Length: 297
Image 1 (cartoon, one colour):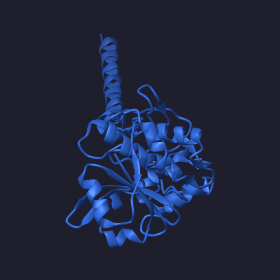
Image 2: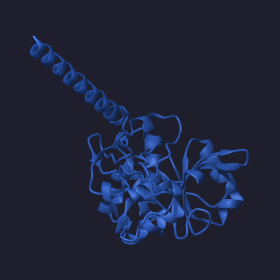
Image 3: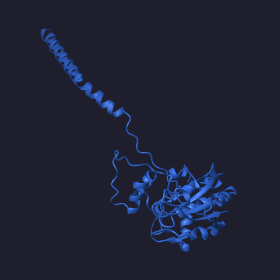
Image 4: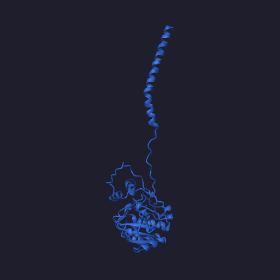
């Protein structure tokens, strides 16, 4: 009996020691468990939002293409695909391996920077282009030549986004005056290249407007540099495409579209600038920069 009682006491002491060890261990492990649980259950960083491939090229209904200051005779869908700017921590990205024309575009045009920075990611990609909404609009659609849907396309020895103001202006006019959504900047640029209106290393020949407009069912009539005649054409529902020299819009050459006349000033669609397109321009501001102009109907 004594042995049995002694055994019970020993087992009881061992059991108490085990409970104390377990208690100490749980005290030590509890903070680590809580910390681990915190990291396992906290929300993680969400992945960057993918940019839908829109703002691209569209030629006839089924045409597709990959997601612009222009030179010489060259110098925007209504809400083009701008893309997402990489987080550079406020510092300028390293563009040293980018084409020089894109480096210049990045430096001069803040709106075009996402297009420039997306060059290596998006060049060669094909984006579906649907301009049916723009073609059906009551207003003249504002298209940017560096819209990624067509801006990476080759044109005149460079990129449409840098040298494609002429095709983009003619596209805006054709969409508005004919209502045909097939007439995207890409489609017009392809036509210009096939017909010899694309000038290597420069942009577009003036003949793209004066002659090429007929291909899109439009009549282009050369206008004198006269405010009254320009205003009259616009009041009759026509559009006026101007080719500009160096000045407020370009350092070289550029095309813009005059879309209306309000309170003594012209409204403008500049295919390279939302800022310029948001302003009105008096005849005196524009006259010295205009090299030629055509009324389209």
